[in-house]
Figure 1 (tube, rainbow, N blue to C red):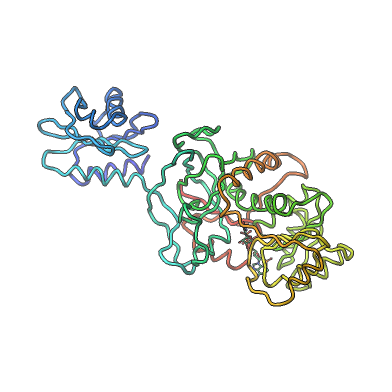
Figure 2 (figure 1 turned 90 degrees about the horizontal axis):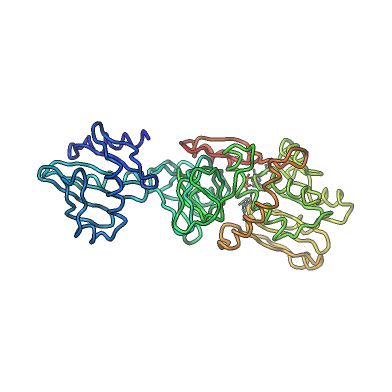
Amino acid sequence: MSHLQNLLLDTLLGTKHVDSAALIRLQERSLCVASPGFNVMPSDIRTLVNGFAKNPLKTRREGLYFKEKDYKCVRADDYSLYAKNENTGVIVVKTHLYLLVATYSEGMYPSVCVEATEKLETMIAVHFDKPGGPENLYLKEVAKPSPGEGEVLLKVAASALNRADLLQRQGQYAPPPGASNILGLEASGHVAELGAGCQGPWRVGDPAMALLSGGGQAQYVTVPAELLMPIPAGLTMCQAAAIPEAWLTAFQLLHLVGNVRAGDSVLIHAGASGVGTAAIQLARMAGATPLVTAGSQEKLQIAEKLGAAAGFNYKEEDFSEATLKFTKGAGVNLILDCIGGSYWEKNVNCLALDGHWVLYGLLGGAVISGPLFSKLLFKRGSLITSLLRSRDKKYKQMLVKAFTEQILPHFSTEGPQRLLPVLDRVYPVAEIQEAHEYMETNKNVGKIVLELPQ
Ligand SMILES: NC(=O)c1ccc[n+]([C@@H]2O[C@H](COP(=O)([O-])OP(=O)(O)OC[C@H]3O[C@@H](n4cnc5c(N)ncnc54)[C@H](OP(=O)(O)O)[C@@H]3O)[C@@H](O)[C@H]2O)c1
């Protein structure tokens, strides 16, 4: 509310073009803020809202009367209505959330009101002007999105950082067509508005978390209603923000791509990463045996606490040999690999006969040199690649539905089977540069979360 009050005081009354002003919230048809002494009566609110709902030409022809019929409509279009009496005018400007009503003195310039109203529709978002390092990131006031057909506007409480954000910032990972340019693949918050034709269970005010193609690191983001999920009971907004991208990725890699079966052994690289910490728990839940690699003892210990049967420090030992030893020479049935280039030979060495090797990241580079094909063929191995962000809406809807039904309840059940989103640090979004720098040091165990100003 204070943002709106400030807007009235500074941007409108402060200009001296405007005598008095009020804001009407369209959805509730109620006055939300007005300058002293300027009260818009409920009957006037109805008249004004109906004026915009009608064909603007008809409104103009029939007239729009406001305040004891002192004001007559002299102009109407989809965006603004001008009404006039002899000495002063009234301008009404509509955005998708508000009507702004202001009186202005004869001879003043009413477009000030249109400009001010446009400012109502801004929000703070993480932004960068050119690709490069974390120092390029800053918070910028940008246009607030409005939900399209079948979409929901989410007021973001928290979002989480992903490696994709670092790549996008470096200019190496453009958002898919149609996606927001703003960083952020996941968010939690409250439903702020429903777009036309939203038929699901969502209501304004509901807490929710969302899988996004972008846009999460802002105060508001739009998302197809089917990509929203309820927040499991007992979880905070920050914990919820850490779920969608990492957990849906891990769930997809294990079940839809890797076809994990009870009794399988699964080697999970970067076992203490956001995706890794989710994959360990989901592999356990599927009845498989998770093994992990990580770059420090501390990370391996946490992975083991989450359910890893064994962990190998790839900086100190050959994980391939250690894996073969653990599996008594059989190798693993499934490898979840976000490293790529630097691991290819060790991966294929410890892959079981007919094993699946799922490549979903390239932290260790994209270039290889050596007899990959012959080694893979000898194992009758399958090398499968996977990217979630660029999948189409239908696939993501199916994935979110399956995850919501099969996995989400386990974040709230008591007992050893309970799933846990692992959070490393929470940063206020204003510290976005520090958050990126921290992820680049490879120190995080689990997710790095960003809190948005409310
Ligand atoms: N394909 C998809 O749909 C999809 C979706 C989400 C994420 N991803 C990918 O999944 C990976 C993990 O993402 P995240 O956000 O969970 O990451 P994260 O939490 O930042 O963890 C990444 C960890 O990987 C390890 N690492 C980094 N460079 C390495 C290297 N050259 N060799 C070996 N280990 C290395 C580091 O841990 P150590 O200390 O153990 O070395 C680092 O902390 C990323 O590659 C990301 O792009 C893919």
